[in-house]
Image 1 (cartoon, rainbow, N blue to C red):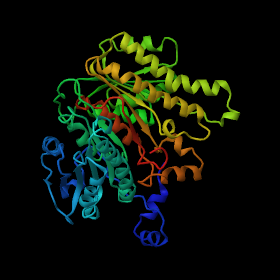
Image 2: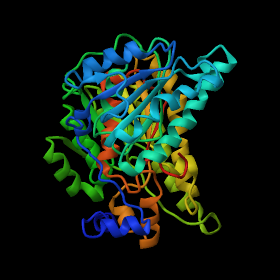
Image 3: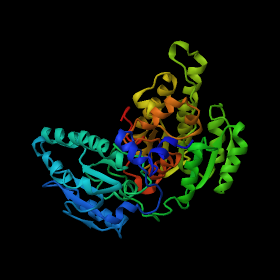
Image 4: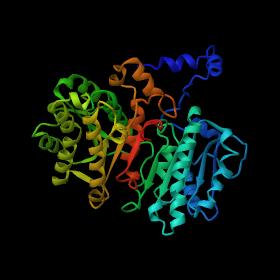
Length: 446
């Protein structure tokens, strides 16, 4: 459903009046897989004294954005992105270097620009003062994201563990593109990958790979299937028999394969394994339902059915994949959670429980997969996304959901799909057991 309010307040005749009245004006986000237009103004790269990541950042930028100018300094000059190596901040008293770098530069940041703060994982710091200072960066980036979101600027914190310095490429490429337009206020941790990050065609990183997407007929699932296909994957989509016609149409657009089945059926894992006789490289657990009621009015079937579809089926399919050794070496599993699984939501105890369980599955299985040929599992937690489900919400609730984020608008299915595509990338082997919120830095749970 179109965001009519955003169109009206951003229309030239209305814009001045909206500004005088102090009405929120959602920025127009720059989306797409191509080069981010804001980067025509270049990237400014800075570092705290004794920073250890600046060299790795510079080298990664040269590899993934070779035609984008990268410079130091540039106070007051236009920039498309600001990247700061904060790894050298070893005590709380040194946090002032954040103000010194950013204050003179944020005003000149282009609309839909990007801010990335690179740091160390606090728990890996031996010194207690360094641990406290590195943890402080989370508050800084989230606050800055809320200041800059009205201009469509995203701000993210990238924690790089020792040994992961050479695995920056896919994450920098994602964060510095229109693919991450609705990802802000996030903490992304890169762990030492198993082996050397794979070299692939950055435009088609999934070429020669097979992908499975559940709930693929429409909405977010269809967008995920289309994104993975654009990245080169041969996609198999699964959905319930009632959606068979829509599923076939969606798969037909990407030369994919359609399978209709109920993922909660007792024989569903076996049928999926049989359909994946040649193995699978990417598995996306997207299928899910909501059946809302306050707990006082919720019957057992309404509660348990949501758990079965959203969480139990995910666990059972994963177990079958591992038992049959169907997930290939370096495989990727991406599970769709929700902001409700992090912050909770009134009237959704069943849904919030199921989506929190998905996060639990991811965190429990991550170390197991890491030992199986460097495979990974991660979760994507969407916030308010413009879908048929949100279009059916009452007007007031829908408008509140749209405006309750730093970017002042709802996301699109493609925002979730592009995030899944980034995590599915063979070069993203350093991300495992993470939860990435695609919520425009939602004011709830972010």
